[in-house]
Length: 211
Image 1: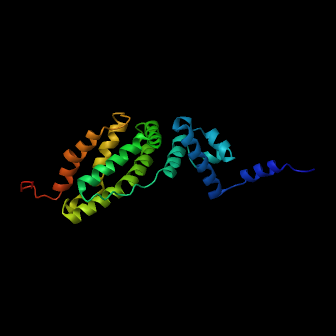
Image 2: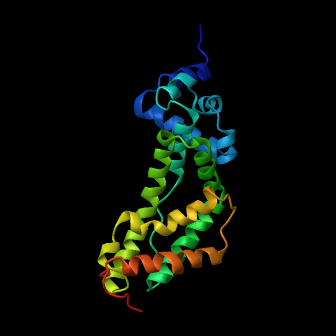
Image 3: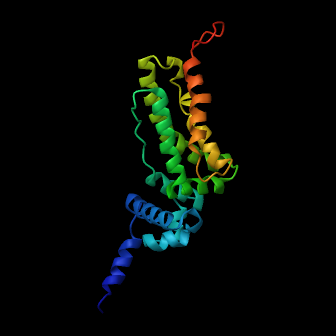
């Protein structure tokens, strides 16, 4: 009896284990997420595309949101810090890049994931960690340059301080539901909140601020 080559290939796919199977599932989830967004991501669709079964997926990711978050992590890339020569210019450019990302189809996927998590802290944690990881590094880089130029206090080099501007922008999308933040909002965040914060972070509370 002669076996079917296609059948043998399918059997080979079901025997994949460990990292190889995980990679196949994530690749399939990325493809589904890119084509249909989070709303169109299904465990059945991912399993079919990966050539495996849903049980193999659930053993690694307990629910659709966990799988979608893992797939989004593969899609997202680190944003290099701009270098315009000034803290204000760098901050505005970084916010404008972030605004373009959140307004893009990929940013729409992230907004869908956050909405799907609702208020559940345990579900939101991976998404917040993901966005924090991507956000903090470039802001700390541009702040480090600003400190070296004397534009910011050394005490401003703290992740929570560094990411204030990006958090305010994120709130425009997540809390207010805007499709894209107007440029005047970005300017306001930088000029009215971010620059005063990082410039006066190390100021003596008993001494009037300079400038």
